[in-house]
Amino acid sequence: MSFEEIKLLLIEKFGAEVIIDEETDGLQPALLISPARIAEVCLELRNNSNTYFDFLSSITGVDYGVEANRFGVVYHLASIPYQTQLTLKVSIDNDRDLNNLPSFPSVTSVYRTADWHERETYDLLGIFFEGHPDLRRILLPDDWEGFPLRKDYKTAEYYRGIKID
Amino acid sequence: MATHPKYDTALNNYYQKIADAATEDMVLNMGPQHPSTHGVLRLELITDGEIVKEVIPHIGYLHRCFEKHAESLTYQQTIPFTDRMDYLASMNNSHAFVMGVERMMGIDKDIPKRIEYIRVLVCELNRIASHLIAIGTYGIDIGAFTPFLWCFRDREHIMGMLEWASGSRMLYNYIWVGGLFYDLPVGFEERCAEFVTYFKPKMVELNQLLTDNQVFISRTANVGVLPLDVAINYGCSGPMLRGSGLKWDLRRIDNYSVYPELEFDIPVGKGEMGAVGDCWDRYKVRVDEIEQSLKMVEQCLSRLQNELKRTPDFDPRSKMPRKITPKAQDYYVRCEGAKGELGFYFMADGRSEIPTRVKARAPSFNNLSVLPEIAKGVMIADMIAIVGSIDFVLGEVDR
Picture (cartoon, rainbow over the protein chains, first blue to last red):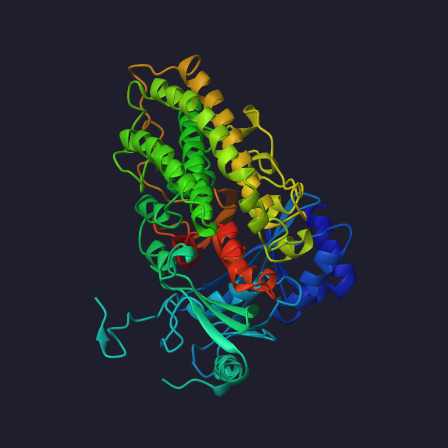
């Protein structure tokens, strides 16, 4: 199924508002999905017999910069039966308040591999995933402060009183 | 630093689970210094007698902030950092990274054939080296010491050759954007051909010693069975996925570099000794892949010695761009690393030489995440067999 056909399929199933925008100027086209619907969209794309995106290659959290104050998540799906790839994006405005992290629905119920990917995204970028079964830090220690891949992150000088060189 | 209590819920649940388990069952720590965890992986096992009820992997001991570094360095400067991800197959890492950058720059079609063949040659040699480690250390995990020494002996020949070409034994920094560090040294092709002739009978010996060994089969057949649907859902790739019986190799699917011109088969697990997708199948896929890689090495060598012969005026750096500033775009590149689907996701803003975001999709990270699923309800001794059969490299899991 081509990119346009996938777009039409999603619009037919979920309505026009599910696709906010599309990026087609790069080498790989991407669909910008409404953040609240991402889990349903993934489920449909995985189960529909015309698309079968059964393999989640990767989940990338993105901090779009200090001025933009915008956070996003990029999903790279692949279909093993059809040998196709698809990029989905969601993004949301956030004021970087640590009491109110940017939050998206978790896709762990669709792809189990999302479990660790979402934990990593939470760990490094402070993006929260609603409905994730076990959202702990994964690469950094549990008591680490701050989220290192954020653009406004200041390198920690001490960890538990130990100087970091 | 104030944070909302809902962000601590999962952590508190985890502490509660461990505290509850400690009163009824036993919580056993395996690693981070356990020799069979192949690096610094800590597994928390909740055990009932000798049965493992649950496995909680703890990773991150080798986290070296690859993605953060990549956001502050230019594309060329990041290549040595990719070497340090999967340090057993560094060439494959830099190849994937470099391919992504070249495609973003639109120069991937201009790379001379000789360079592409050299890249594939060194990648396949490195894949053999990586699989030799996987096989050798797997033997030692199960209790067979000799295959380990044999594998390391033969791997050392490959390390020596790659050191000759790049100047470094493990972390090569050999494949550069638009070219190579240097052409192959004079005489490399001959020495490599000699190695192939030397190595082929050694593989037969290894198979007799380990693959068909009844003790080895008893320890690995029907252990840690990974069904295909679970493997796909957990994002497993490489020998893990092929061991479960699916013919899925990105060298054939994506047809990148010169792989469409090479002849090779894709070995898959057939359940010869037990169920499809057990530890023995995964092991066997790696053994068979070594043979296929040898076939590819031979084909590369014959082309490098004949129609793509070295010429005095050949410059492997001639197509190298002086400044790498791809136009503003996102690009996800994937290729078949030694452990599975290795991907890099780049976000370029079109103005600077430094990417705004680089994400590395490491195959070992995904392959390891299936461990809690397939290790549920096994014996502690089988845990070792399962962990070894996944063949992860912690440098890549933690990045």
